[in-house]
Image (cartoon, rainbow, N blue to C red; front, side, top):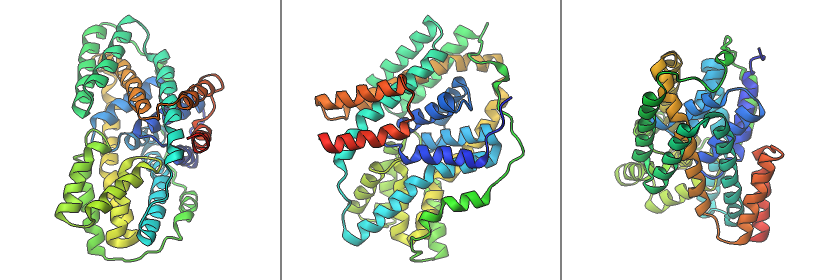
Length: 392
């Protein structure tokens, strides 16, 4: 049996992934699959698909929920903690730096050309991940039909409720089709060991050194606590991704508490889009404006912590109920549906790229090196951004 992955390795894996996870939560999910399953071989494809299904059903940012799931499966509670920190710290650092620049100069540096190059590459990463997963989980005509139906339904309808409906319907169909002999795409002895947690506090402290230079502008305990409570309360109502959450957060932080102006809120969302990682890191901008660096930390912790705790609890329960024949059959239906939805996400992301021939070129080259050379996406995204800066 392979040696258990260290906590520092887990942190570093997700820190590197988060540094280049531009393009929304599905892009980050695809890179997680590529690194954790294809390159590091820490988990099986069907385990990742189970995690995506669970993360899609629970509140909170789907990509961070998936990271928590992987960390918990590999190293229990400590693994979930360091994995989540690794996934959130890069985007948090980026948003704090941009926010400081914004409040000092009143604008965000233009990076549009870089992102024009990112989008075709992100599309290629999503397609590559979906293709790799489909080879493991789409084993026959019935699984293929489920995947195709999920793909068409998500493209035609879209939104959280259709995603939820697809997962529930696929689970029901799986239960009906596969309950006699559900099978499993991977060997049953692939369950990772859960050694006694070890928390390397020195390594974690080292990772936060770049943030140490940000000034702690104010420290009002009551205001910091209020920020945490407000964002924690909103986080458990977050179903369907960050974009669904925007109207709710705007109503609370702009109209009700008046912590930021409408223009500042729009700029915060824009900064969340031009930084790697989940768009909900925009909470750090609001916290920084209200209560300085401590407020940024409190708002970010509030938006991520409650869903992460719920994900850990649900993952623990999932490991128990997956032994049921009925649950295995349902999951056998859900997994190809998730793959179909990932292919649909690639189409949605691809549609946002600039309709010129070099967008297609970036996509084709990125897909080729991913599939043929299995190049790490951490190199593809910066290269695509540089090409975009030159071509667009």
